[in-house]
Length: 71
Image 1 (cartoon, helix red, strand yellow):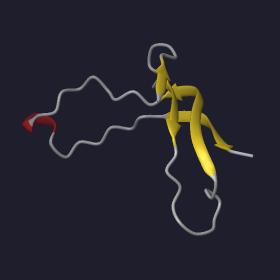
Image 2: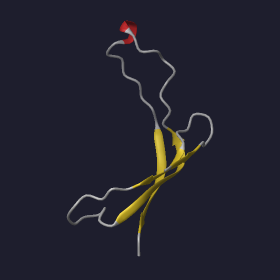
Image 3: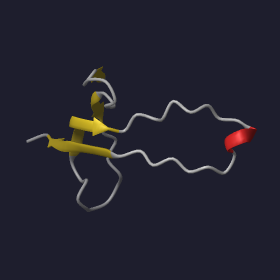
């Protein structure tokens, strides 16, 4: 639904509408999910090609998530 930048090297803040699964569980009734305080998560600048096939890149990432429900 919406994104906002959160500084260089950080993935954007985000608000998405949830589509709850059927049944019971922790996600029952969740209407929206909001990602806040992102730190890291941006893919490295390395190009994909035959020279680095099979290489591993570690990308650190941290964020806070809020799960909104309707009352």
